[in-house]
Amino acid sequence: MALTGNYNFKGFDIPNAYIRVESAKYFTDRSLEYDSTASSEFWVERPSINYEANIYASSASRASSPNEKIDSLSGRIPHSGSSEASNIIIQTYEALKVIHSGSGWTDC
Image 1 (spheres, rainbow, N blue to C red):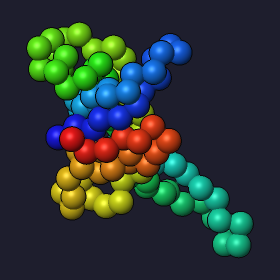
Image 2 (cartoon, rainbow, N blue to C red):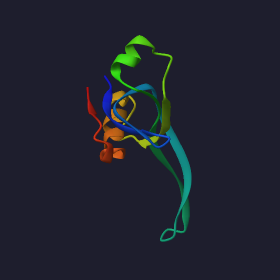
Image 3 (cartoon, rainbow, N blue to C red):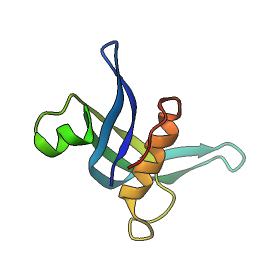
Image 4 (spheres, one colour):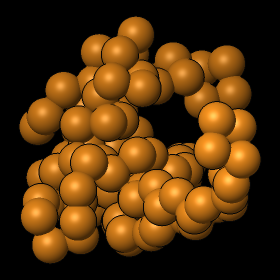
């Protein structure tokens, strides 16, 4: 599973870049919030996915030289359920397509 689409690398457009998620990990962020109506504090858990993805010039360059990426992406996206409830790799690819919607990233 991977994505392909336009990618701008340091001012150069790469029209058929190959984007591959290398890791996706379930993470729960806990924060203390204040409810002003009840005058109390409570813990809120926000599940998310930490991901890392590599970008290659094309799928052929990934196949021939998997260690020669041109760039990488990493970040955190919201997760919609428990870590067992859904495939976090698929969720990561879907989120990347939305985040980079102007680049026309599609499944390949």
